[in-house]
Image 1 (cartoon, rainbow, N blue to C red):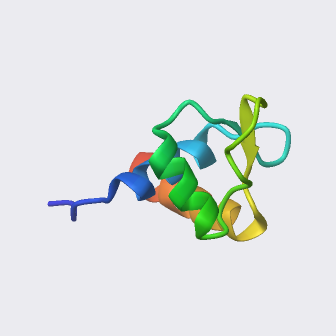
Image 2 (image 1 turned 90 degrees about the vertical axis):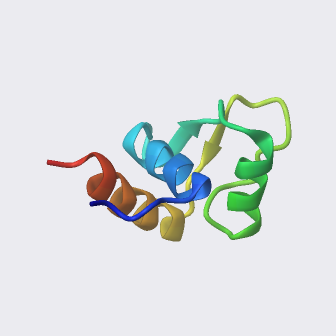
Length: 73
């Protein structure tokens, strides 16, 4: 049985799985979750008119590890 995951981990995993252009990801997720990830230094600030955020190096590493754990083979 898998351990429960937190919403923030799930969103971060999706950002990692769906990232493009070396760390950009669409910001179509709950704003409070996205702001929390930004506050943790894992993504760029989600405020503003751009439709994407950028994963920080730490955020990219965590996102890819979570994506592999949750969605990998």
